[in-house]
Length: 385
Ligand SMILES: NC(=O)c1ccc[n+]([C@@H]2O[C@H](COP(=O)([O-])OP(=O)(O)OC[C@H]3O[C@@H](n4cnc5c(N)ncnc54)[C@H](O)[C@@H]3O)[C@@H](O)[C@H]2O)c1
Ligand SMILES: [Zn+2]
Ligand SMILES: [Zn+2]
Image (cartoon, rainbow, N blue to C red; front, side, top):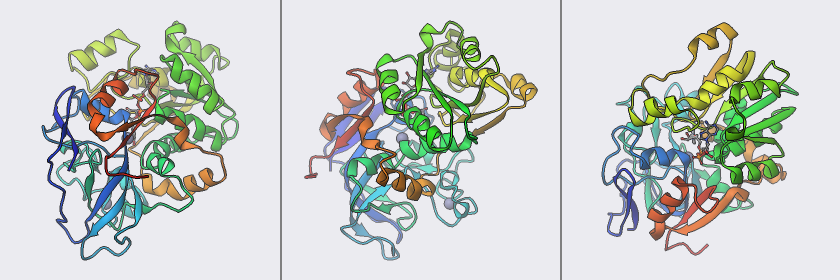
């Protein structure tokens, strides 16, 4: 089959002869991919920043597909079902999965104490091949996949596998109260949906910060929020304090993560010298600009080791910091209701639809933010719809 093939940092190839995956466990399913996406999280892999990313791996944790084979114990799926597959690999029966914390599964990535299992996310994430391919093996097939309701568009469905629920969970972890001011750092797909979800959860004012004007322009119109380019803010923390009555926002959301730009010292120590697990610039700004007693919600991805964050300010200001990998499955029912009611239109963020064969160019474009790229969807050659 055709599959994305990682050859090392910034080197993506198309493997035309990767063996089609087979059932390995009675609760596996094999899914023929109909759509997959490139995510900001894939960029950390692409740039060689995730430990134990092995040559030959196929990335892709955001995909929809059609079930073509099921293991003998699978009960919730049948051949021919059209499914969306959450990016988390959750076992469904451990202590965390039972509470809906599928992103923190204790079973699907047993060798790692740092994270649960994810599709296409290095051996750090469990070593599962991902969906930037024609076929994928989906373990715990009775747990993660959801049959796509007939009235839900496939392009909305593929965005429900990660960025929509992640943005929603970012807002949810912010514990937004009616009328709160929310600042979202990052106007990528995750930040866009964090901004949109902040309104759904009762925010009274939503501010988005990035350095890419085309993304700020998009989110301004799409999520009706105030936008600022941090390059024009002077000191971002002081600027944000000034526009929030010098008290600070009630909630700050970090939708940027380890590859943040905007602070030379953070970039040097976090990305060039690798003295910390990524540059914590957005997190820094969030902790320092949120009000005393405010909440900082972190969905931007950071490595497992140390980061230079202003922990003293966190303690002295009494800030609550929450972070997590989104537990996608938990959010699907209410997000689908928001789509049906017209309050969410996920597919509007898709800027590029690219044949899977052209994946190397697609990575380059998304990584370098060329051609006003916001979200890229890959279409395998065998797909007719
Ligand atoms: N926790 C989860 O479950 C989860 C799921 C999906 C993605 N993520 C993470 O969320 C983050 C965003 O993902 P994405 O797909 O939107 O990525 P993206 O790369 O498309 O967007 C990131 C945006 O942040 C901006 N940015 C860089 N430095 C900034 C700064 N200092 N302040 C404000 N903005 C800044 C960039 O210009 C870019 O527009 C990534 O770290 C990704 O790994 C987490
Ligand atoms: Zn993703
Ligand atoms: Zn589990």
